[in-house]
Length: 344
Figure 1 (cartoon, rainbow, N blue to C red):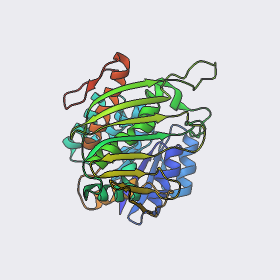
Figure 2 (cartoon, helix red, strand yellow):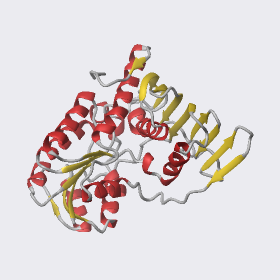
Figure 3 (cartoon, rainbow, N blue to C red):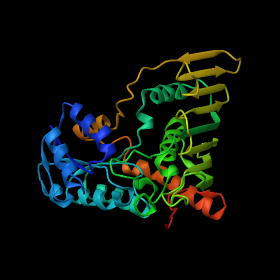
């Protein structure tokens, strides 16, 4: 039985982490911290365990094996590192942190203390994307030449359980739609293609979202990126908080032997069109109420192996995110590699 603590009891904890841990028979929820003490106490009553006055107190509990870090972006690195040095495994929500240096410090903390660090990039765990990966690896469309992918919705308004939304506050979120939505698609494209981003040309911009005073919010609400991959593929990525209608989450890959469309057809979640225009559709059942992240984290702890979406794996995604921001700021193409450093 893995004993878990929750640090940050807001919306993402309430709709993802808490119910998915509670549903896992190998987990016992035992501790909770939130800056809103009443909220932590209410969660403790609902799921069982203790509400702590500080996350330091929670981390002092030697019975807790692992924690989920579900706080504002700015605090991810501080709390994750404290947990790792306290001997806890860590599942941290995305974005991993708000500077590359902080991200690297988290990986170092995990490795130095012999603990596992996992980041909540959930798209690669979707059964539809798992099946797409199998088909791509089997060569169903040959080698991927180009791709286009998008993730867009109407924005995070109303997502926070508190009044207003910290997502628009640069002091708390640091980054906007690119790090909230685009980050999922960077990780997904690296997963599907088996290639890493090595170059990005991006426009990261605020086009439509306004604060209470009528000015633009402090972070981006749209991002458009041209990504060059390590295996030669090139594609476009769009992330948007201004899709005022049904969420867009499609991905299309164009290969030497055909085309694959994922979540791009109203009737079928995967459609493959070969070079002779033959169409094959695939319908994969999946449960939208579960992310798969918690089960993957627990499985890694139970079997004592590095999580698939480890901190080190997430660094490739974070380098692409920071490089895209740098590209937009400088109006230049930016290379992404092991030594890339971005200063916010």
